[in-house]
Length: 156
Image (cartoon, rainbow, N blue to C red; front, side, top):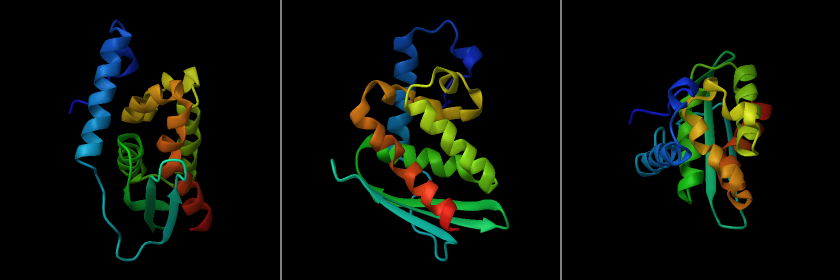
């Protein structure tokens, strides 16, 4: 999977071409989730369930000091919720708590339609989920793991 084009590489592509790339990336994370499984001794853990659709996520974190050493998840649900959890765990490793919190805020802005966040290359492949903003019922699916991250960071 080549990943999400940078803002510069995305320029000149049609919206349909970008949507196809983003959809492929989401499906790849759904079919081959990264970091799925439980940690033996997490430093922080949080569970979320979407009562509207039944999606479930348990996010676990392990820290080295202030830095996220390991992030894993378990759960079940739609392609959006599971792909988002997979992408989240990849994005967290090596970040400080403050950086993880900043990423959480930026991602939340992205899926709520913030145009500046959608152009932010620092979000990397997370930008594949920007189309969720057009489907308000799916925003909760995309943010389920991120809501768990918010709790896990507060409780760690």
